[in-house]
Image (cartoon, rainbow, N blue to C red; front, side, top):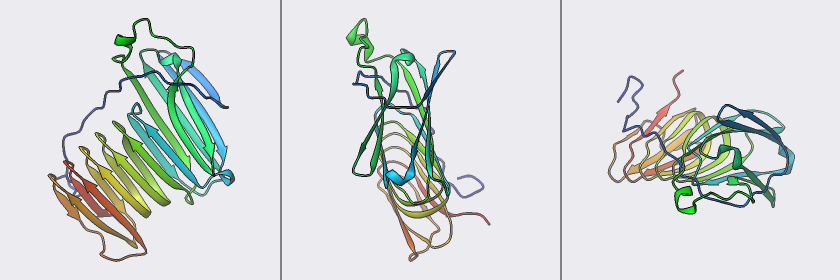
Length: 225
């Protein structure tokens, strides 16, 4: 436990294994650097109520919310065959779904070895406070700052850290820790099967945050004034 009262577990540095997928890229800016590819995209927020990120490859997701009329995304890709990885963005029923994927014409020289090629993908988003967000990821860790209408997170290996959080949330991890610094009027319920739990949030509030983990530690704390 550190000086802020956060329970510290084993910090894991996720490794991403790349698989081949179909490409759908609609618009945006792509920048190439040394062994790195950066994809920048944006959308009008009036078109969407919900954002979904579903991925087995992304290792870090960063989200900042603010009063804005634009959804902004920067995706950084490094590692084996990085130039063949891009972003699939699908739009359906006011929901924007984001998923890293491979180009349709990419074929590894050896398919058996291709599954073991290392790739690192990081997504950084700026979102409006009025959105709902759903994240389902195998190895990704989530870092989020700010207010959101509703947050639904399901992580297997990664950690979940929320700063200055306001809103309703359901946070679930298998191995990773959950740490939340919540503002006033956020109540919290926490349980971990094999980890430690520290809950300083109210029993009742305008917003409800539920946190569950199998092996991770959970710290639900009040944002320092």
